[in-house]
Length: 291
Image 1: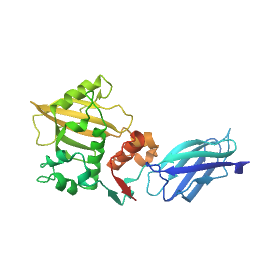
Image 2: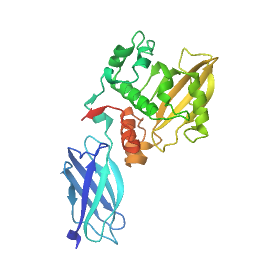
Image 3: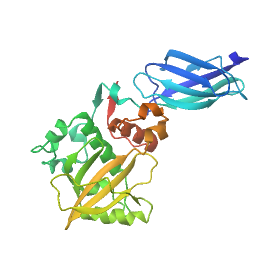
Image 4: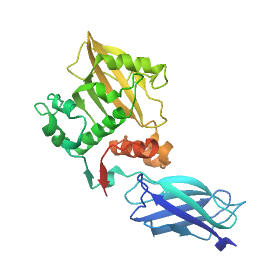
């Protein structure tokens, strides 16, 4: 009987906590003219949906649409009887974030880099604590995303990428430009043989204004399917500049199965990278959201 077939759904954020809000669920059968919609169900506990078909005719396309998270979709194959348990993790919707809990300056392990950076574009004359405090949420989130990823990215010599970043020159939500130790470029090149990096296209990466005379010196990426680190180098004599960014590589669609029409024409936000890093790489950038 249809009543014997039930979907038991658990909706989680990237930290593994249940969503504390009401959601809409859309279930569309893939062979029969059956379409079930439930609205405003409480996601703070497991959700039971009854009245569904079971195997061998139990294949549904499920879409979940919560208020503060991006809508996701996936296929669900129902058992012939009883409960079919499904757990879905949803990424935050950046537009619904009310405020962000950032780490305090005293807790940052990259203070020397910020103390040396007094000519960051749009923040000239500020450095250290003052610079960090003046950054808007988008830039600050981007900074924490990238430093977290650099801290966790090893080189063949056993050091991490973060150890070689010296001075920031320009900071955006999706990347930053910095002076790095010349040794970093050599170590990254050596790390290709160990599979830690691979060569990448550098055509879309250029030095920022004010650094004329620097020439392309190679671009390299880590190998993750989503949230991979890209380092694009530029050299002028012994001076070495790097464009450092995290490529989402269609990560929201790959990692979370966010509905495609939600992502069409939408630029990647640093909060998206935060969600990808935590769920896909178990790497926490150190800040949380209030929604």
